[in-house]
Structure formats: C-alpha cells, structure tokens
Length: 80
Image 1 (cartoon, one colour):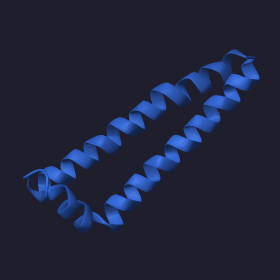
Image 2 (cartoon, one colour; image 1 turned 90 degrees about the vertical axis):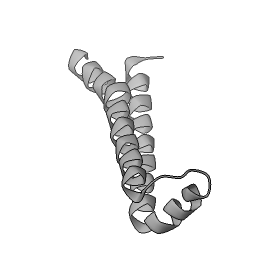
Image 3 (cartoon, rainbow, N blue to C red; image 1 turned 180 degrees about the vertical axis):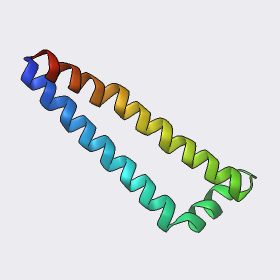
Image 4 (cartoon, rainbow, N blue to C red; image 1 turned 60 degrees about the vertical axis):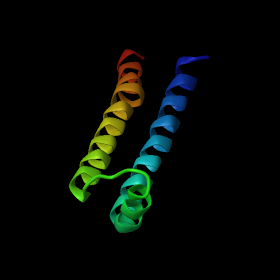
C-alpha cells in the first residue's frame, strides 16, 4: 500500500467511525427512555448509572477514533 492509500483508508475509517458515534448519540438522545427500558430488563441500574455508562462509552469511542484514525492520519500528512 502506498502512503496515499493509507491516508485514504484512515480518512474513510474516521468518517465511518464518526457516523457510528453520531448514530449512537442520536439514539441515546432520541430513544433514551426506550433504551433504558430495554436494558432495564436485563440489568438493574438507575437512570444516572445508565447515562454514565453511555456517556463514558461515547467518550472512550471518540478517544479511540482520535488515537487510531486521526492521529496516524495527521502524522502521515505531516511526514509526506
């Protein structure tokens, strides 16, 4: 693979991952009660715990995108 192909791949991966992040956020905001009821069938936790779990998950996912997609992309752009 050439450097340009790797840059294109990282850019597509970042775009796809941000789309997943926005869909997750949208579902969390728009279908919060439904998601809480669905997960509440299997796990017993408060709404505050449910929100904290999702907020932490969103943050970890976003940091993963930054570390594994955008940082290598920026490094390749700076080097080439």
